[in-house]
Image 1 (spheres, one colour):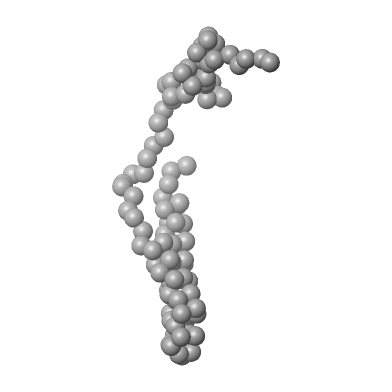
Image 2 (cartoon, rainbow, N blue to C red):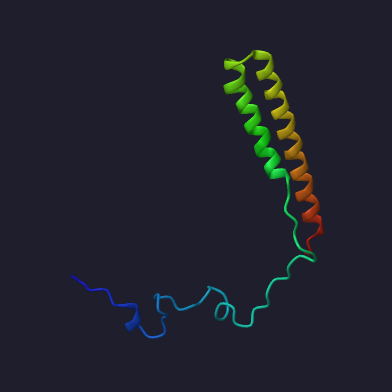
Amino acid sequence: MLKPTPPSAVKGLGHNGHSGENGHSGRAGAGDPTPAGPDRPRRNSIFPFLLDLGVVLALFGLVIIRPVYSELAGNVALGAGIILAWGALGGWVREARAEYTRTPD
């Protein structure tokens, strides 16, 4: 049976058996310019939270409120959740498109 050669015994390899090459020219990070970041700090968006809240409200109205309490209250919660989810999804897409147009090429 063949014994594998330990990485430390192979000349030119690092401690984990890799040479540090990134598949492109030169070593990883050697003289590569860092990519430019955004002009201003990125602000956190409220739309992912609102989308989650709308989906939870719609499902809660459909699964819990409608069969347990009343069909009307369940339908109201379902409708409010759907409207909130669609509005949040639209706002999130609009915000992402605006951010994409601001990014440099």
